[in-house]
Image (cartoon, rainbow, N blue to C red; front, side):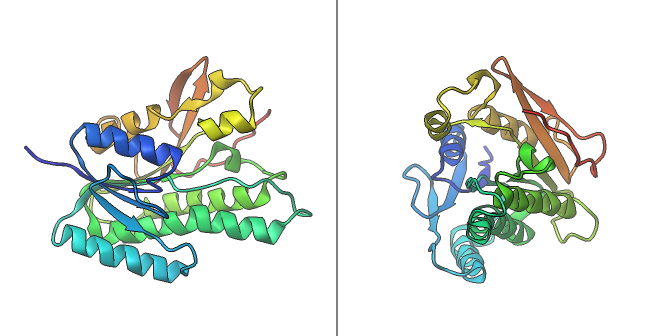
Length: 246
């Protein structure tokens, strides 16, 4: 029986934990990358928070080389990220730098890992945000970082990107994830429109196994209403503008 191999970047976050639990229950080999180890992962790579972008990438590559030797990963899932509110007059540079480190650094390192360790026909899944398809004046740094992840996704899905043959790069774009932290921060919100964390590893597993996997470079919106989540594919790979009203 073939054992699938998966890497989760951000394996100690709320979504990362759910993903690792899901795939471990399915008897997959799972590596976690984060600032702290995930106790149920088969292999942990701890990233030093004060290391440079390049240093983090080099460390991840070295550790994976030890873990995989001549093996390959069937999928790489990057769910690392964060959120910081603030407009142009409120800590713009500080917020943008933090959002870049939490979203763009991990996503780009995951892409770099994919060029060497993702198998032919494998899946790279990055995490964008539906909010970043439009303007984000009250959270500019966040919107900039997620928009960069969107561009990375589409670029990796294009010719001459350096990705392995027949591989697929997809960006998942939720509006709001149903996490404990979000519920605590927004106790009066309409939770029926929040995407449950368990939906995402189910979706990813189907794509990894080739079921309804979207074209490479797609930005896939997750639309939750009345606790039911719909997967919305773009009409074209270059579709990116959406007017979002509160």
